[in-house]
Length: 344
Image (cartoon, rainbow, N blue to C red):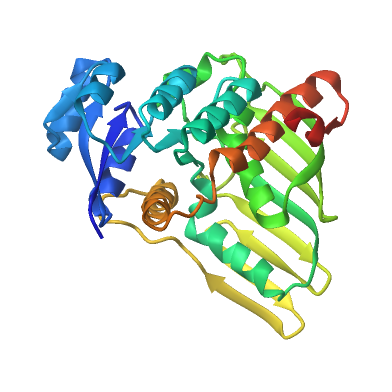
């Protein structure tokens, strides 16, 4: 397979993980990087041996012949950069949150569709190997038809030290973290017809909500609770683990803290350790997320090579993004929100 030439736009906090993963993937290479901050360009370029560096995206697209671009900037810049990639007929990966608004996200999907270029959202949480293991059990039928799920992320980890901008936005936990957990709920239990939400701000030093609880009706009949908190102090800090409970017609599954996976079905109970691998460049406790970065980027390369639509395509991510918008709308109105109304 020929090596695909890619560029990374945005050399901030999380992009280093993407660069490590690109270096580990056969069939793709980052040949250029772009960031408006020359110091970040220098640090990432020197660390990963990338000589072609740009401070403006327009100059990058003008000078390079690219097979794809990986956009790892903050959300406000996503739409112009995605539309610039589409105008240059360059397939694009875009970091989450996909866009500032659902209208922007729809426009980005439409721009790439019109240009005929693939678009994938870097919605990596579903690619963690423990989450994939849960999906495999659901698909196997071992617990029958799911009728209830709880997908939970509760922590007191200081995420603001590495990403201080998170403390300043009026939207916080649903937009930054909850979007992942909502996507996992969709991934495991199917699309959602309605959502009810409640939020709170426990940490008064930040601008946005740091606690959110969402009740969802899934199209297939299951009900799920998605709960997220950065204000929950536990005896053992679980960050960044997602804990999962699913009840089915023939059994149950539980993904507990420490990656203990318990499946109870017609043939009894099994308990296994499904801890994610610690990649050579990864570090605890981030290793489950770092592993998922490698997995989703490898999936992108496979899709480009085969012509298949990515699992987390822009069109698919609209359904997850709609859940985020529904959560904020529902929390403000204290009323359920129908998802189809947002996707029209």
